[in-house]
Image 1: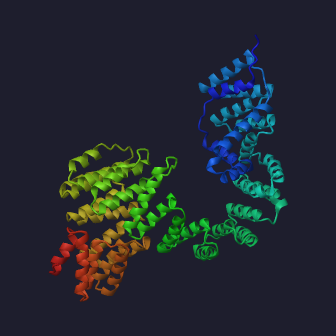
Image 2: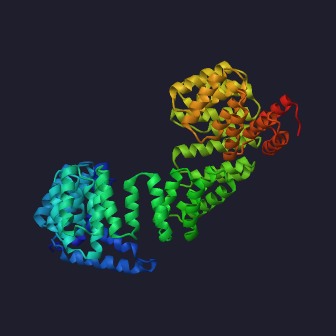
Length: 613
């Protein structure tokens, strides 16, 4: 009996045989562009309004659309000859040959007029990274099935990023003409985004102006013009268009955000956004943008207030929780930071589909617990770090775990953990070496630590981070010559490393030698990192050594306000002591002792000044 299977059965066979390779970067871009076409935009706009209970209805609509598609496609008899050619092509494709199978599928599509075979040819060309051949197959696919939105999406995406951009213009114009007025804005935005990816920027800009001309003067056209002008670097045109959009719709969040983007000046943008929020307090996107501008301006308390307002409306928003955790850390409010990051991790844990990595938050939580000497809690946070996280973050977590073992008295366990780490990159190998040195130093085995670090410095002579740690350890055992040489090498290898300038300047001031050079070094460090409390502490100490007590007090008070660190407290206390403010000095020293009872700087200072607490 003659085989009368329809192509609908054949399409299932093709699906079973098909390989689903990851598209190369260039083709992936085209696929992304295709998904951003006006056709997809209409569906995306509709999806945003859907409610969770509509899933069943959506599945029914998809099934209906699939049935309608199958009904309009040709029914082609699956002869033994056709089946043999198809199977032969698929097996050859699986073995790594693409051209023969591609030509077979393309030829059979032309013979049978079945668009599914043209689509399969396109898939083969995509897998082989053949852009021109992909376009040829997609063009045939669309010719054979002109009603296919999917074929049109891919076709437009490909031609826009190829040398055939003109082929997209009639499609854009027709889609805009047929679209309902309430859908046209979305289509305009998507067309602008697609044309922004075109190779021929001038041709794309001219085409955009032609297709939007019939709708000139509308709010959406103003926004599209602003985006296009910004994309080609014409800030004046972008600002004109954005202003026009805001005039057309003064209450539009999109318009004010567009103007903020094209202004690109936080000093102008901040008051504009603040004014908009006064009359539109529920404008979430504007509030979020305002918060980010305030962060850029280092106005952390104000930024924190904006993020807290956003969080109040959506208590489970992970992004706002993370931002508030970072801000609280920056403001040295560790209790709040711990609360925000804990909630952030919990929110991610309740949503398995959320792909955000909690590792950075977990590392900060571990550090906060460690700083209050709660080592089991710190260890527990580190154990939550996902195994598949970014390699550098995973290594950081493992290094911290080793350090915690050492702090709990298990030096052997910490060293064993480090010995089990086998990073392949030299920079990470250096990190492991430094971590083992830290373990030995914390355990009081300073000379052994120095010997190990000296060996590591010879092994990694161009690693500025390792050399910096080597310098600090050399100073600890009195090898100031080695320290200075290592720090100057760091300055050569990493001229923007402010820590090296600060460390050498502070060391000179601490030893009360070459004070003018110390001042120059710390000044350079402060220029590179003006808000660093530890560099401000060094500057205060240099000023103290120079006999400028008022300047020293100012720098040290500012530093202590930013970071209530025991070392800064000790230095500020000594300056106040020398100014005759013994009670204030004693109070600061008691604060330092409460935070770090074994602080060497505190003990040496009290001994030198013959004071007791």
